[in-house]
Image (cartoon, rainbow, N blue to C red; front, side):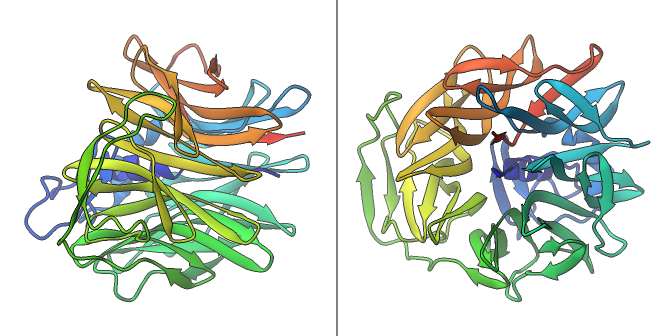
Length: 406
């Protein structure tokens, strides 16, 4: 089974909320998204603008002789519908209101999706073969962003509101485990989940000390990194690897062993291979977002000329693959990295890659591109793009996760 997570959807979700403090008044923390920065201490329930979550879709695909699954959301007639595709045939979830699928897992003949739906407030859930299972989280808003299946059990991760505070959590079946840090100032979130042996791994961020802090948890034990002081400056000459010139920039005290260094950082994805934890995300520096991944606690920068983010990660043998996007001359471009070598996926218009998997000798990435101002769900096999079908009247669609089964 191969599972990927749509964590970047989470960050875009927060960005899209219409909050009364969206101007980021004094004292609020901002979190980076591909579209800018957002306050992370909302004062309204997120479900008020949940309809804007149309931009998130999760996808699974297969190599020749294998099955291709895709999960996500499309907008048709003003309604957002969670769905999945198997080899291009779409199955919609049944809902009288907006619903959203943010991640997918395939186990045997069963298809699992994680996400949420609107019933007065947004409610976390997962679907098994289109049948919804609610994830209890009190009476306030909640969302599930990631799903995996291990030992016949379904694990999901996300957040819920408790006393006006957004709290990171995961569910084993429908039993919730709160992993909100006691020292978090006002918010935390679990964006990804993986299971290895008897341990549950989740990854995301929490707020503290005036910044967003990247972290991961093993069960309920959190790992985050020491901050460092702003005393030394190291200049990186940029990246001439593979996909062209990267960004020459200076940053302070780049020890390469910090997830969090008094700058906002976040983790979007997690995978565990041979007992080693790999995570992917970004950190902010001088007003830009820098894509990166971590092996354990050692950071590797994925240099680009401007704002960039790594939204997904996988490994194949000794190789680490990340998928994401960067900005070039004002245009956001989908790409993936093998190690630090970048491969561009779509240069003609705005595009993003949200997920990646290696299947045999092939690399599959999933995301979207814009065509005539319309966002269109797609995936790439190597650099060859394939569109995913949606109803004729659908105005938008996006893909966020990818899985390949044989």
